[in-house]
Image (cartoon, rainbow, N blue to C red; front, top):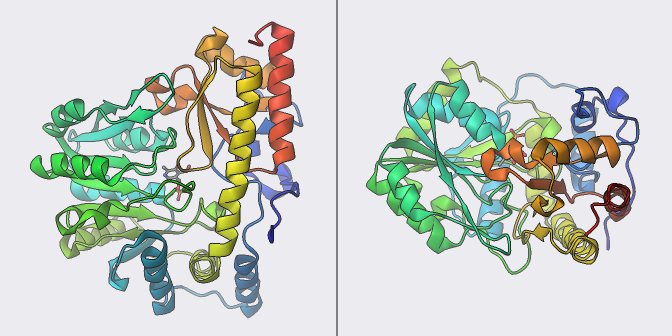
Length: 399
Ligand SMILES: Cc1ncc(COP(=O)(O)O)c(C=O)c1O
């Protein structure tokens, strides 16, 4: 390995304001004891790629950070990345810079729907899809994914057809968080056809688009063909891929000029004017030189997933671990522990000192599940799983 994914980085929660450490709460709403391990929120315990650190240092040395517009060079680098890694040919002016992906979900709702309109969300779902829809007074139309005995998720197309008849917009999460599914072109085309037939705009959140395991290929929704592209808003960022979430930058790619103008106008009327300078600098460096680091990262995450899966198979054979096709977030069904969702969460934080994402954060479809973040040095993962094992033994839960 050329890059270092093994060294533990001390992310001091006080000095560095590290979000995932600061938001942890135990079952009584108190901060859990020091040393509780958060393998929750989707950011990584790895330092980003050296090429990005160098680019940020050079920008820091420049010392003049006035208002910023993304450069032509940034746009070209993004186009090249999409062509090289996703076989998707885009034009530089399709890219709309914004601070983060989540605000782009809100802007899409304001731009393309009215209060009361139906919005399709495939559950279990990343909580902001439901949150943004409800906060803006739109109506969530749940299209619950189907899950088989091996924990593999697929789309309920009959239900999707029914929901599409009542919807204006669909939030597609591709690859899907938390199920880790990388949807096939056939699945995406079926979604697209149903949406086109019903006049439903597809807002495809592809923030995990580069985190794809070997044997799977991510298909950008808009790359399916022009009719799909013209009815889409594609939300991308390297924030997950290269651990840049704190630099707050995303590229929303909108091939249709009318949709793009409406989106940009809505951004403006909702107060989005400029992005920071450092976000696009980091992104350009990653687009141009980050691929070798990313390829090693993906291998390391696969190693962690294999370790996790083997550990669970050995110690908790009744726990169903879903295949990790994409993302670095493993999703697993703990119903066999026989605990309620609340008791399971309390057991993990209070007794195991382990903080994961509870399935219910992804809606009722996540009941019984936990999501664990595998983007950490293996010794952290091993420590976390050891805590789980010891906690379960003490409780008589080991299976
Ligand atoms: C599907 C999905 N979209 C968006 C985000 C957040 O992106 P951002 O930080 O750019 O708002 C996440 C983070 O976990 C995510 O999983």
